[in-house]
Image (tube, rainbow, N blue to C red; front, side, top):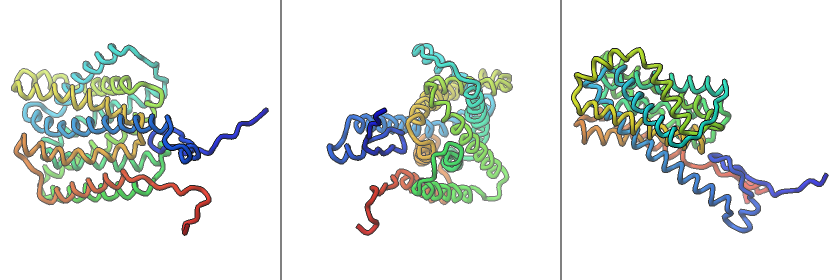
Length: 335
């Protein structure tokens, strides 16, 4: 049998697409290069939509929480999101039957990220302002980056580790800024950490399912599972819904349509095309947007020290976006 020899290739760490190094150096960008860049651009656009929508969610939850209890708000939001995603799924028509292992991961993702996360986040925002909560919840990407390196074998590139460490330091600074001795603030901070942990668990459970299942289907099933998990709060939702002002109910519907149905879909789209650790850390951009939105719409701002922590979070994001340089084989360090 004749074996064909191909030039050595390199694998892009985010997309997994192999690109011939020799051909790239000799002839410049190839069709594969152009396709890879288009995938990166689409993924970055999806991430931008996700971050903006999730930033607005912290403000929406803070406002809606004045009329809805944490459990009823979670159930109402997820129910709206499930209906919207279900309609999109029917319109698309594509369905891939999940394997038993994939069903297990979907249940874990739905209960952790869509169920427990939303209830804990809603309860936290009844004790903390939107900006502070957003910054505390965003220790989640640090957990994602570290756990993905172990469980998903994504490794620990130096920029990712350093950036995650800097961003985590920012989250710690934010935590100190809220620790003024008020047990309510401390309980709120604890609930925000619970949300961060379940967020990380949900992302790590979701990532393997996207290797074979469509992103929209994964998001729809996880949201539906989360809705089922929140059904014990149906009585509370029935109590809150007729008593809530129309503006609060409109905000609840918005939370279901945009930060849930739209943003979780764009997140899944990007996650299927990007490294989980690197993608997770980009959500550190949400807290500054949340602070700005909360100041404009709710008239509330975090403690002064929290801004220092927010700045560290942004620096951490910038560091994680740096790519590790790969030295060509055979080249001396002192060339």
